Image 1 (tube, rainbow, N blue to C red):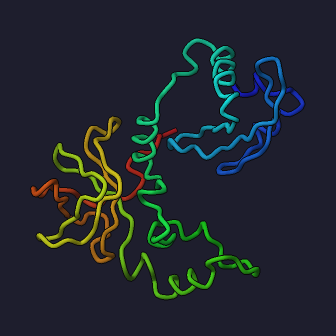
Image 2 (cartoon, rainbow, N blue to C red; image 1 turned 45 degrees about the vertical axis):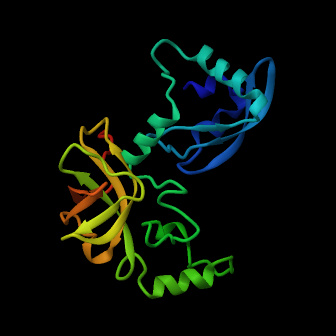
Length: 223
């Protein structure tokens, strides 16, 4: 409803019809001009939301225009730190943490994102087919899981994950969950310890802290 106040009436269908994880160019009217901007609907906070991509020199004017068309209580500005806690609670991976050039989509739980059913070739296809054949992320190697803290201390990126004192994984993201009230973390752990309910420890600077493997996402809004 807020975005439609900045988009010409004839183009409203571009906004209302945009599917989850899709993007489209949409004309926005702000600062006295109408400009095509890239609009995406990835909802990286775990909510159904939009992202607008704009040139740096137009960002302030767009921000101001959105603030001006929003009615009282419709919008609350939030910073990057809150975005990161929200995406973690929603179990969404972040490049540089859960995703990297050394990892693969199967271990990260993103196998369906890469379609090997398509007939055409693409960069990396042979490598991914080999990984899928050997059961990466399901029967071999490590798998991305959610960890629920049973205490008050949070695991952080690169902290070792332990089983009976032996290292079986590594935390990729972790912090206290403002919504749930206890620490949560994402971690890659050996497949044999990846089942929900598995008791593990995180090495917090030399002291083991109890965690439990849980199904993702940690939090999902009930509608």
